[in-house]
Length: 95
Image 1 (cartoon, one colour):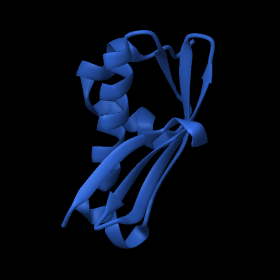
Image 2 (cartoon, one colour):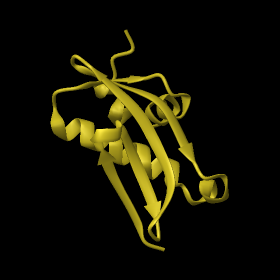
Image 3 (tube, one colour):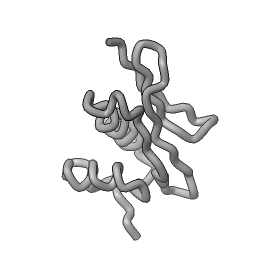
Image 4 (cartoon, one colour):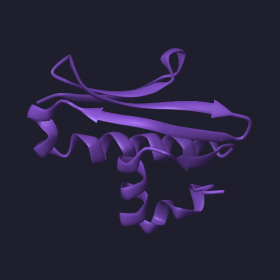
């Protein structure tokens, strides 16, 4: 199984593909100095593979690398991931 995750900034989403087929995405909007994650979806037949967690971790690591944006987790999946992984708390702007 070949997995690829990337930021498709022209569509304001991170995507994960498995063997060349779209398996999930995390939508976002950037406003000023925040990135608001609004929706995450993974193909129901692939959810048990942990693809959602891989996708969100990649997205948050990408945000961390940029060093310029604070995360607003409007999507419940992203919020839960951050709550379960305290090392991502410093990225969050829950204001």
